[in-house]
Length: 148
Image (cartoon, rainbow, N blue to C red; front, side, top):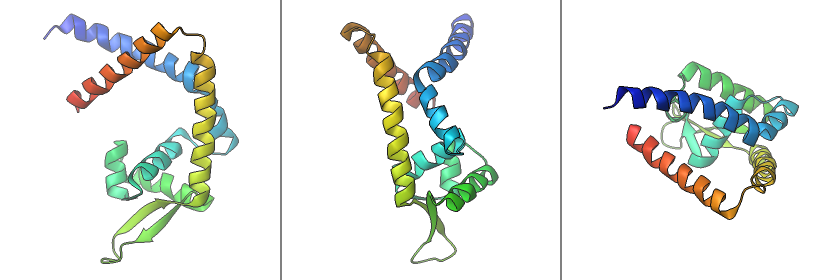
């Protein structure tokens, strides 16, 4: 294992990712702020949408966050009407988190705002650049899966 290469990768990740986030996804931050939602909340909404229903423990694992944080984020989203708690039919001690219609609508609105911004920014790239970008993201996904 090449330690110098690992150090370079570390530097590259921390120089690229914040810029990528700021340039590509900055519209999302504005939408979240206007709606009184933190990035953590949209991550919860995304995971709940992805899994349809999920308990707090599994949600914490999916987000790599402590249960106490996930509970706090979820409580706010329940108060806002974006998610709801649903008791398991077989064991009422088990509680799942499920997206509400309001949460689903907000996520669609948020996703559309991000998608539109993303398209506007990437419009400047050539087809060759877009293909390179796609291949890079595919390779990053494969590598991240191996690291997990």
